[in-house]
Amino acid sequence: MNNLTVDDKLFFFERNFFTLDGLWMIETEKEINWNVALKIDLVVWKKFLNIIVRRIKEYLNINTNNLPDLIEILTFRWSVEGWKYEIMQNSFDKATVIINRCPYKSAMDRNPERHEKAPLICKEMCMPFYQHIIKSFNPMINIQRTKFMGLGDNVCDFNFFIEQSSKEKFENKQIVYPMRKVSKNDKLFYFERNFKTLDGLWVIETENETNWETALKLDIIVWQNLYQIIFRRVKKYLKVETNSLKDLIEILSFIWNCEGNYHDIITVNDNEAIININTCPYIAAMERNKERRNRISSICKDMCIPYLQPVIKDFNPKIRLKRTKFIGLEDNVCDFYFTIE
Image: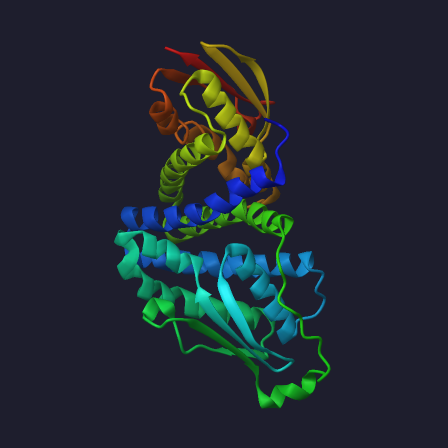
């Protein structure tokens, strides 16, 4: 399963992006409490949206930081994520966007256990982090919001403006960007680039707020739950109808190729399968961050085996997994040896 299409990878990252964020929030709340989970979530998304804005700005080849630039960046993100909105006004000093559908509120609406959290998310999350990213983008741009679907309104509004005293710093002949229609490649850029970043920020900020042991415990729980969901989705997507060892390898190979876990399938028969991973993007990400390098061995030893065990047991309780090599422990490959009991 090496020849993945854009549709394959987009299916994987788009579907699982929102699930990953939701699981981190839910499991942190269960393990600690709601207030700490909300505090971590706010820090994560403030940092995350700043990264997203920088990446979109570069992707769209935007070289300035004026108000129409901000609107183009935000509406690109909203279009990719599936928001429904209308641009009511977009000029060099004023802009108004009306939101008719928010995918994050929709996700909470689908989960009866999260209904009561929507107003809290609106007040404690959505308001402050938009203030934060807008001021980071351009401190002369202000925002006023009066309607929130999470607080019972039928729409959310975003009213952007530049203070009268600052207008002379802007040229009146600004380009007003039309609303962009996003492509599959636009979506793949967004979800693939940001998927691992979102997970990494949750680990880092949970550790900052609590400790490494708690962050690692939550990381394992989140990925155990996420992989069970991913397995169900991929099994259906690939139209896999049985739970044989060969089926397991097909599903894992698809998932790992999507994630960038490039690997060799050494042997597969009815009773035995060996996969060697040659490149792990999660280790590569930690190696690029000198502050996270000391966590690599712990992730490999304590995280990389447990996250797979529940999903394998649910898939087929007769399948066993043995690990002896880990790239993060300075082996040249990560090995996965599967057998049928």
